[in-house]
Image 1 (cartoon, helix red, strand yellow):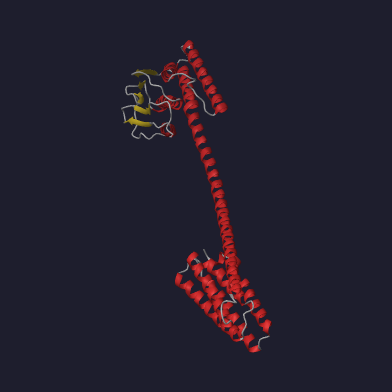
Image 2: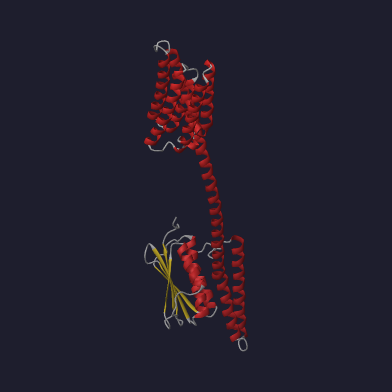
Amino acid sequence: MKVKGSPFDHGHGLTAFVVFVAIAMTLIERRSSLTAALLAMAAGALYVAVTILAGNRIDRDSPTLHKTGYFLLAFAVLGGLMAIFVRERLFGVMWLVYMPMVAQGRIFFRLPGTITVAVAALAMMALHIRLLEASFTGALPDLLALATAVVFVLVFSDIAMRESTARADLQRLSTELEDANQRLGAYAIEAAELAASRERTRMAREIHDSVGHSLTAVHMQIEAARAVLDHDPDTTRAALDKAQQSIHEGLAEIRRSVSTLRADPLDGQSLESALDELVERTKSGGLAASLETRGEPIPLSPARKLAAFRVAQEGITNSRKHAAVSQIEIVLDYATSDTVRLEIRDDGVGSETPEGGFGLLGLRERARQVDGRLDVVTAPGEGFTLVLELPAALELPA
């Protein structure tokens, strides 16, 4: 603990006041000579200077040698002042001069050092009295009173020091709390921005996976209608009806997304049923597709079922748009008890770069969010395969 935080700001002002008042009152009591008065005031000024100049460089954590040297110097000056008063046969309120040392002993030292300083002060006051009196017998009441004064100063100094320490701790805690509140506010802003960014990414992914798939289906159906427009009106009409149905489904998907921000295209269906409907819609758009389920179905969490459905949906959409395919195969594999594997294979032109664009990026992010993994297997002329592996569990990881 630094002395600057101790009671009375080292007690400098109080020390000077007590010292000079005590000296003046004692000198006035006997109308001492001018020489004695000047010497006493000079010794008092020196005592105050030692307290300020030396004491200002000492704190509770300073080396014991430094603190001991400071108190020895102060007591030496007090000894000189005592000699002047003994020569003038005076005591008066001289005991007040020792009280600042007693208070600082409590501030600078722990209990053993405090007791040492207090005993030294009492010893010097007793010596002063002894030099003035023939014996201690008549001075015992005065010594008891002085001991009581020393105890009072120690208790008062301890209370003041504890109050000062508590005030400093309170100020430190207040500063730390203010800093923590500022950091918390900054973290809240960052969290809100991150949540908004994640929600924008999620919505972009949902729109791409759902609406993009519907629009791709509409495009394929219109292309099929245009191909037979001149010579097969019935087929053209059927293709346009399917295109219109796909548009209705896309609009319904958008409404659900806007109303709930968490559209569930499965509507409580099993993953097998949802994939079967997806295959039927794909075939109605003029593209051969098939679904094969292996093993006994394992329950999945809603988020994982949605992830698997979106991967299948995006795989079909990508094959239609980019791969010039004639056949798509979907395999839903429950062969192992702890993993569900979904494969979407086409017989298209394949690719040299399996990284893909925004669609595959979104699917990889979706797979990671449900503790899954998405791989792409492709090569020029060997088609394109998406492989999704999901943990077979009803709950997502914490």
